[in-house]
Length: 170
Image 1 (cartoon, rainbow, N blue to C red):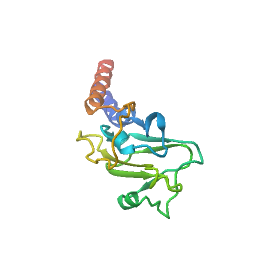
Image 2 (cartoon, rainbow, N blue to C red; image 1 turned 60 degrees about the horizontal axis):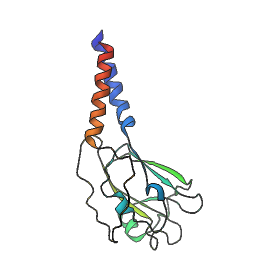
Image 3 (cartoon, rainbow, N blue to C red; image 1 turned 90 degrees about the horizontal axis):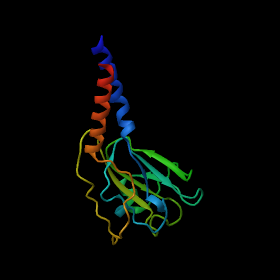
Image 4 (cartoon, rainbow, N blue to C red; image 1 turned 60 degrees about the vertical axis):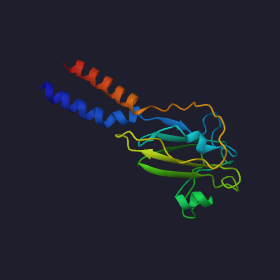
């Protein structure tokens, strides 16, 4: 009987833990989603995992967010068949691993204002090295204020939760 309860708890934990441990990244930290900001420098050193969220904060009506492919990113071209995010508090859940590209499609914000972001999303279950993309513009010292959680911390919390659940069911 106790083993069936433990199995149910473990299955529930496996389903719920990734969403509990997901990190919300406010793109640009306190600067938000704006022009003349080096988003590649901002992304350096951060590890993005499936389940994490990008939060694009900006004054509504001033900017927007398009998810684009690599070519559109290079050309700062918003796709014609895509609808931009425009709320000013747009949340994008990183659902799959791989490279992800985002741009602002307003005026010349992407091309002239460098309002674009490239990240590499890692699978939630396997640690990997940081993205190897190097910004083409000179880097500036930007304080690290996002709440990025290391893989070790994620697994540590999962073990703590699992241990507590095992103790409660014993």
